[in-house]
Length: 81
Image 1 (cartoon, helix red, strand yellow):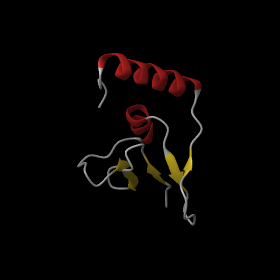
Image 2 (spheres, rainbow, N blue to C red):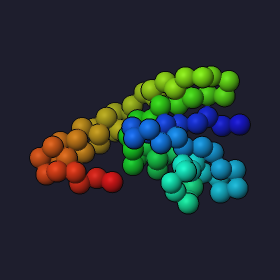
Image 3 (cartoon, helix red, strand yellow):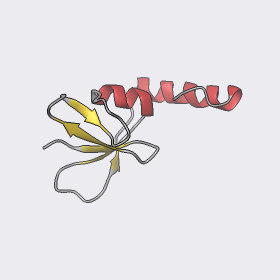
């Protein structure tokens, strides 16, 4: 079993062994977890056997991308997603 992830919007991403990627209920396609992180920023993760989600640490690249995306959203309106 793989970990479940939750994005900032509260959507839970679950492992799909058939498509070898993660999916959420409102999507028909499975994405690699790196693509989910790229689209939604740092994720909360829940390992098997745990009842709670905890925040994943951000890499320097993820932190810089999130800051740039937030600043663009602030200046130009929502431009991402």
